[in-house]
Image 1 (cartoon, rainbow, N blue to C red):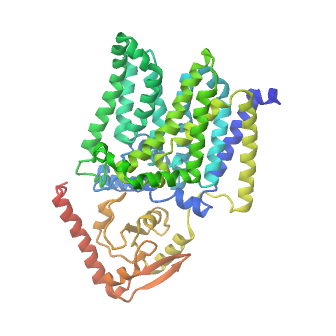
Image 2: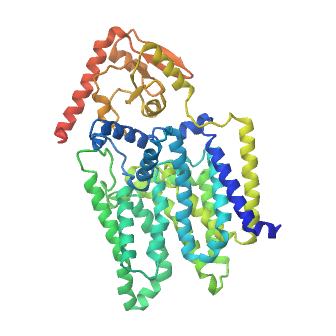
Image 3: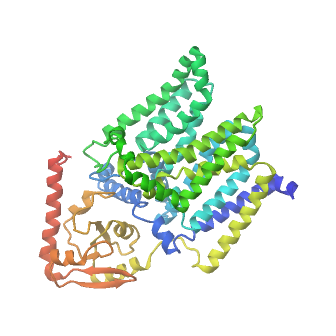
Length: 540
């Protein structure tokens, strides 16, 4: 069996089968209500909305006008997220590919990029092992992706705008930094990558520094103190990277102050050092206890214990130092770093440890995957790959038998019902909450649009553009999932009615209240214009 598993043809077959399982799992997303709702949520549709506005601006003669008055997330996500997503959308235009295919294509691209970026770090330490095991590891990786999607788990790793672009750039940056012999082009690449990574996502700054500082302390600290000459060359080594990080932070600070695109929330506004006392509060430690008392916390604790035991108990030979160093990197990035990110989230954003979203901890997956592939090598890896593919295939087959058939287009029943009402009543524009409005804008086949509102009918400046609210057309309906029917009736007058759309209530405005609706639209335009004047944006 070992001879058969070790053949190149067998390994390539493993890769083909695992990739096919991954592709089939993508076809289950639209048919699964819970997975589809998460995969095509408002957060994941942010770039789709931006791209639509850019196309409108292009048709109006100025593509950049489509960016005007957007309210952005704290991270800009320029590269690789925005770059690759827009590239896929542009490639899709000539062949008239639907939005869902672009989203699924992005998932394939990002999941593959995540593997190969971490393989660069793997190959930097263990070039021979990488050549032998790469087909086994990538086969397991695709089966892992299939299981995540089928189980509606860790979906941010497949979507744009959830920090996964940072997890892709980190191992490449680490590999560049630890390369011993460098030339000027190498240093330029280090600087450029650090600059664009921090500018795109400031989370890159602590994510890069914490593991690399710990790694360098373990590997070079003693030599720095013993050899003064080495300290000088070692300091030069840090120059391009530190300069790139510093320049990226400065560029980000300037960018978020622009008057063209609005950033309601920004990184680096509050000093972590000013708020460090918060970690001494009782609520923090109580929250830490709740986190580690959960299943996630227990698993994480076991990983820490096993990792520490591995380093302490294993007797490494001298030629195993590369394995030790790579294991340290995986441990620092997959165990230590997430804990620091939880601290940072709590101190800077007041998020309790047990409530920190997975998008901040996504580095756990590639790091722990890499740590596992280091601990399980050779013959054991080939056998495990075989059984994981068998399990992945069996699980997916069982899932397909129990659930709906495969499909690409995402068209929830409630949006189909809303479209029917829209055609019947000649609707075009409505209002809804944050989570319901973006799916309507992107998947309505009747051309319906819905603007984001808070329950009190104030505008929510988050992943939308003020241009949406400055149209002259009246609202015809409201999606009540996140809005208050009583507030709507009080604001727009009585006489409206509600329609049931597959569990979603739709409020239909009375035509006799058109004047009140028009006054409301005018009021929102006035509020936006007043805010723009106050902030110096009115002339733009």
